[in-house]
Image (cartoon, rainbow, N blue to C red; front, side, top):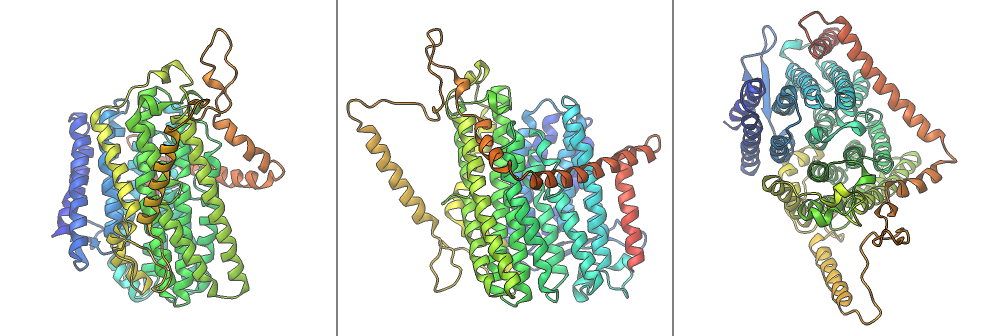
Length: 638
């Protein structure tokens, strides 16, 4: 019953996308918010009831076949992670008046395609969902007012989505048993006969390439740094679908008979992405790119958790695998909630201050207290500082890495030791990027007259960011509540039991755990004592504004000083430039690989436009070409 209602809601989203040409804007945006809210309630009710896996065959599909949908304990949490942040994003889309009808249609269409990808139970439905993701993402990213900037991003994302769809559908095609017809092959047949030998190796490579494109991981993260506020949902929520594909293919469909080295590529890709994300975020000079590319931090750490889970799965250590999967899930929750909250706060700051350049912002906490406070709450969780939401996932990832030292020989132990160092390095750089953003944008004094008269966003938008900030704070204090929806699915993948609802996260029964409530109480007590001492200041003390270091001496004609002399984004980037200066080979190689990936995506788009006939848009041509290539690979593999 729940799966049938979800299929109806997906059809309703598609109907809203089609009707966006003729109906008012508010009907589409608020209708999308209502459908997503209802879908989240349905999925939550299904998870709380702990029902069995539901299956549904739709009367659409290839000739002689049908599209199969399923709602199981693994896909349901990812659907919840998609629908819940989509509600405030749709409300914010209602406030934006600068989009085109195509952009408006892209929002519900993109949500429907993502939901179809999660509910897919066969390769045809998966290809249909991934093709819809590419087309709808292209619509969502294309805007008339910023055609030079976001138009290039839209084309790059379209080519990247098509390339990812080809890789992922080809991976599923290679997993089809030779004795099963490709039209009748669903996920159940693949689980009964998982791939082996060269097929398994090809599945691993294609899955990593395709998931990296969807999730924006290295080296496919070039388009992420050029996104704007219109793509907050795409960056903050949709990239989790790429990690879902890795969960589904590598841990669910491939079974437990895979070699131990499968975790090494995930560990390396996750480590590079976890360091590159916050490092490049400190070099950006615009608000949304800082937050968008900084989201690679949580995604990279989540992929590292998947790598540790594969190591533990091959060594038959269900407890370590459970810790790693729980860490990956908490990091994905942090990414979905905190990054969506921060990107919406960035859109609110741009709306209120009239700019998104870091060198023109400052002191927004005084003019926009609600937006500033919610943004600081999101930064605290994304920076993985205790007792923030991200720290729970980081702590579990450390525990799983420490537990994985017993696996393998010296080579694997050395790799895990390096992974521990990378996790610590990425966490420190992410904290520095969060401090930079909080200080430059919200503390100090306004740097321009326009920022000095910034106005708070309307009440409906304030309620959206307040609700996300409240949910983030609640889950930070009760991380077991964030694990509760995914407990059953993760326990099945780890062949063990999950943490469930608990006030303390423990790596083992006899080991000490992480108690966020106690840490939050101690921090509150320390803050209260410091506030009490600061108010009992004696003679000779004076008050100074926060983030005031670097102010030039005020000249006679400017008695309040020059706000532009405050510490800015360039002040944080300069030490990193000095550190990386003696080793230019590393950032040069990273830029070379990233540029090659972006050029490949642009070449796909140019080829689609050159091959498209009159009346057939290039986006449709890319999708059709991707489907034709994927079906050809499937036929050859069968």
